[in-house]
Length: 426
Image 1 (tube, rainbow, N blue to C red):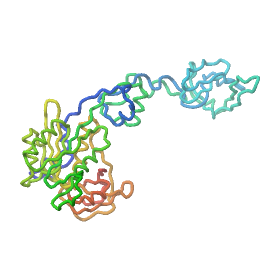
Image 2 (image 1 turned 30 degrees about the horizontal axis):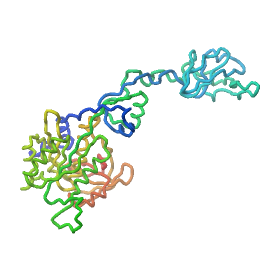
Image 3 (image 1 turned 90 degrees about the vertical axis):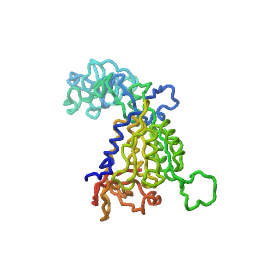
Image 4 (image 1 turned 45 degrees about the vertical axis):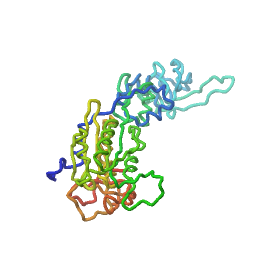
C-alpha cells in the first residue's frame, strides 16, 4: 500500500531498518577465562566481538572413526589367524605398526604410522585373548570377505578435515551458545573479546500511574492505574545476558520533570524505552522533549495497530548512539511495540550480526471477516505446532486478554486469510 502522507514508513521493517542504520554497537570487554569462577555460566549467550581462531588442526592427527583394526593393504593378504599385536586407544600415543600382526584401534584413537585404513570389528572373525601362560596375547582375527573390500582411507578422519590451525572457528557477532562454548574450549581459548551488555533504561510517564511496589495497602482510587508497562518491558528484557537493564524510572507529565529524566537516561544508557506521552494530547510532551534533548526523531506514527503513535529516535554523541523508542502508554501497544521494535534493535546494539527478526510462520485456526488498512498485530494462543488461535481483546488497555496470549502475529494491510503469518513469541 502507499503510505499516508503522515507516515514516514510503510511497514515496521522499514522503520526498524531506518533506526538500525543510525546505531552502532556497544564497546568491547576483554575477559580472561582463568579469572572467572564459572566461565561457562559467565560467557553463555554473550556476544563475541572478535572471532575465535583454531589453535591447532581439528582433528589434531589422523584418527579412527570406528572401533576396529588399523592396517596396511598388505595386511589383507595375510592368511589364517592373525595376531593382534597392540592397541591404539584415545588419549595415548599409538603403538608402532607390526610386520607380523595388526593393531586394534578404538574410535578417536590415533592411526599408527603406515596404516592406511580401518577395518570395522564386525567385518572380522575374532577370537578371545589367550589364557595363562599366554596371558599377554591380545587375541587373533581372520578377515571376512567384506573386510577385504574395504578401500584405502576408509574409516579415517584426517588431520585438519574439520578445521585447520589458524582458521576462524567462531565468527564475531555470534552468541556463545552451548555448541560454541564447546568449540571455544576445544581450541584452548583463554581470553575472549565480548561486546558489553546493552544498557537499557525503562522510563514510564504519566500522572495516572501508581507504583507497583507501593507499600500502602489502601484501595487504589479509580483515577490511578498500576505501572504494568514497567513490568512488561522488564519481563521482555529479563534473562538476556547481552542486556543490562536498570531499575525502572518514572516521570510525571511535566516538561520540567520529563526533560532531566530523559537527559539522564540518554547519558547513561544505550537504549531508552519510554511509555506514554507520544500521542497528540495536551499532556503528550515526549516528542518535544526529545527534540530539546538533541535527539533525531526518525519517525512518529506508523501504519500500525495497536501502537500507531509509536515514535523512534536516535541521540548521537561523540561516544555512542542511543536508541529511543517512545511507546504508547496503553499496555497492549507498549508490550507489542517493545517486542516488535525494541528487541531486534537491542540485538543490533549488542553486536549481533544476525540481529534481524526471522520469525516462524503460523496458520490461524479461524479468521474474522474484519480487515484494517494498517499492519495489524494480533494476539494469539498456540494450539498446535504451527497453528494458532486468535485471542480477541477489548482494546489496547486490556491487560487480562494480553496475559492469555503466547505472542502475536503480524498481518499486512487489508489481509484476512488464515496465513501463514509471522509469529512473535513473548
